[in-house]
Length: 342
Image (cartoon, rainbow, N blue to C red; front, side, top):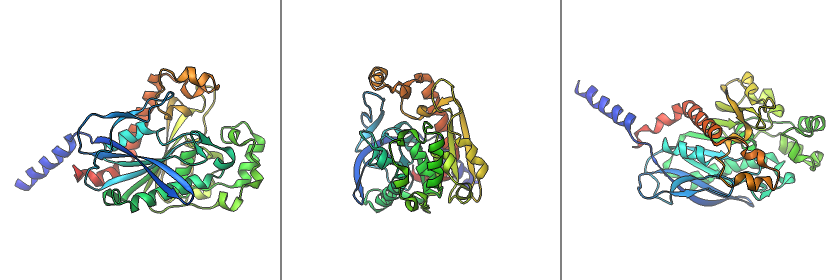
């Protein structure tokens, strides 16, 4: 009876424990000649005045304790990958929510496909971003600060758009260059092809494009409205190395004018591991980006890019909260492995 009382008190204290404080720091790692400028979001016991990070003239940031000491314990690790032209702050809203549940999150800028350095001829080398993910995991597991804090039985990858494709590729999803070339010839204005219209796709190395980049260290993956969906081979999807969650937008563009990128259809190809797909009603592809600042539309209008911030703040916030809720439910088996840290 006494043992049961002690267990009840333990579980009660864990259930009512306050979320972790969110801390953040910048670190730079290297993958060959590729410089991976990385924002690491992590749990801390420290107190203090949080500061706004990852804010810009376009997007609102989050609040975090800068360079606070990391909490002691073994925590799940998520490698977070941005979309084409994005950066390591684009899903800070998601990283913040994960850290509050006791997850370490590392998000790197991908050279050739990041803000201020988004080059079609480099971005089309899709495998480089997938390899960046594995290289960033290598770096975290070899870093004297992070290696002792990572639970190697709870490592995941998440990404949006091109980063969502990269997350799927990291657990075994494969594409075929010839299919991509043929698809872009038929529909050059499609979301997957439009950015690459000036690239001579026949010059892309087919062996590297088509290769399998599975990293068996990842136990789960989450893709937010991923790109390259029509070109992922069913055979590779049936042999994914880990469970996959797809959170799809109902539409690609704001205004409910299309049927989206079709990623929810990938669930039909589940094989040795489940593929779960959830479509968020009334959302568009850009709702997985941060909340937009008060100056965003005026700035974006100068470049004819207002589509990025066409959603209302209420719609985007709702999409964020639905996404967070869906992801936390999916990764609960891995979250439970670190419940004793507090």
